Structures are given as structure tokens and as C-alpha cells.
Length: 329
Image 1 (cartoon, one colour):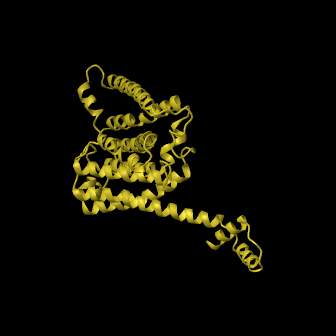
Image 2 (cartoon, rainbow, N blue to C red):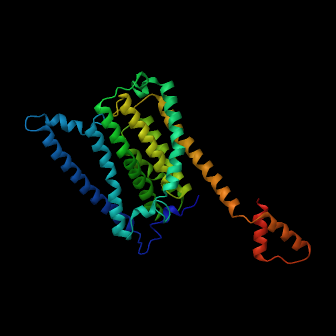
Image 3 (cartoon, rainbow, N blue to C red):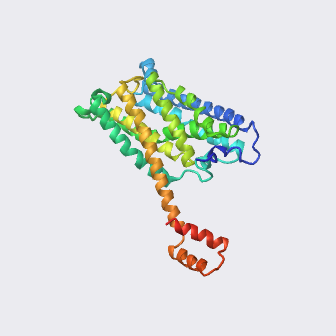
């Protein structure tokens, strides 16, 4: 685990100590403008949908109710808007898009993102299954069968389309941006992992156990960001996590506005990112060992070198390194 990922802002040409602060200020302005545009759009839609004799107050309440399609879309869209705000601000301050900083200088590594999604899926399949077994009410009436109707289908479409962008946007802001800002001033990885946690937790409206769960999630994903030198692991797990939470909630008719739950659900929810982190570390190390073996020299070269040494030939620096690599096989 190296600090390279969190020093990307500091390594940019023209970086000054105040550059990250300027970036945050610009991002806040762009985000504010985005929210105004979003609010105006939904307001116009509401006036058209409700009409002159409709109940506008009821419609306004539905816009903040995650159990409604309009509330779901409005809530997820308001989070997604953070991503373009960060992109435009980074472009102005550092003359490059933040997209290129999702990993160290290479942008989003799609293959790695897909691999981590495949690691996260079985974790949440098992977690959701255990949750249904040990806490039947956690998924509403899912075990009794899904009642398909237009509302459920529309909710699922909204979740599938918007959640990947919403989850990725949170990772860009609370891991990518925050960690690089702090890393431009403080080099120790502990600071860049821990300082953003309270801000991430503050954005979630849960009871104390739920907030602890969110905090542990933030720490684990922050460490994985450093370990993998990119946001793909955090994005993958965050996307799968939210797809399961909101998707199964919509299917089961559970209250998506709930801010608390049984303790056993919190324990399962905490266990999921821990298990995922273990899989990521195992998979990464396995692939690194395979790559190291692939780069090692042919063992026959080591045999030739041993014969040369026995005959008194002095090994060069290159042959010594080749011998060392070959012996790793």
C-alpha cells in the first residue's frame, strides 16, 4: 500500500497549497447551480403533472419520499450531480478531468471494476440470504412473493439506471476528491482514510448503529482505495450494495425511508464489506504472484548460470538478477 494515489493533486504542474481549496469552492458553486437546475426542472414537471386543481403539497412531499418514483429519482439525481461538479472544478484548477485520477493516471480501469463487481455480488447474495433467514421482516414481504405492478417496475428501472452513477459519484467525492485533497497536505495514509469519514457519515440519516455501519464501510473502502490505487473497488462494492438495498427494498415493499433496523441486520451489513475486502486482497495478491511468475526468467537460464559459476565465470549484474528471478520459480 503506497501513498501515490493520494498525492495526485500535489504532483500536478502549478499546484499550490491553496489549489485544493479553490477546487472545493468551485465544485460547491457548480453543484449549487446543478441543484437549482434540477429543482427548477422538477418544479416545472410538478406544475404540469399536478395542474391547477391538484394537490401540490402532496406532490412536493413525494419528492423527498424514497418510496415514490419521483422521490427516488430526485434523491439519486441530487447525489449524481456532485460528480460533474468535481469534474468541472478539477478541469479549471488542474487543467485535467478528475476522471483521469480515478486510478493513478489511467482513469477508470473497466476490467478491474468488472472483476470487483463479480467479487461483490456473491458477498451480497449471501448477506441478503442470511438477512432474510435470520430477520424475516428485513425485506418486507419478499418471502411471500413479489407483487408486480407498474410502480414496482418503474422503481426497479430507476434503481438500475441511476444507482451505479449515484454510488460512483459518492466514491469520487468522498474517496477520490477528499483523499487527494487531504493527501496534498498530509502524507500519512491514516489521515486521508479517517478524516473524510465523518463527512461521509453525516450525509446518511440513520440511527447510531447505522451510522457506525456507514463509518466502518467508509474506512474499509478508503483502505481499499489505497491498496488498489484507485476507486474501482469502492465503486464496485458501493454499487452492488445500493442495488441490493434499494432493489430488494422496492421489490419487497419495505420502507426505503427507514433510518433504523434490527441489530442483526447491522452486524450482517458490517460483515459484508469486511468479507469483500478480504476477497479483494486475496485476488490482488494472487494476480500479483502470477504476474511475478510470468515475468521471471526461464528456469533453464538459472541452470546455465549455475554451470557458469561452477566453471569460474564471473556473473554480471544482469545474469545475477536473472538467476535470482529464476530461483523464485
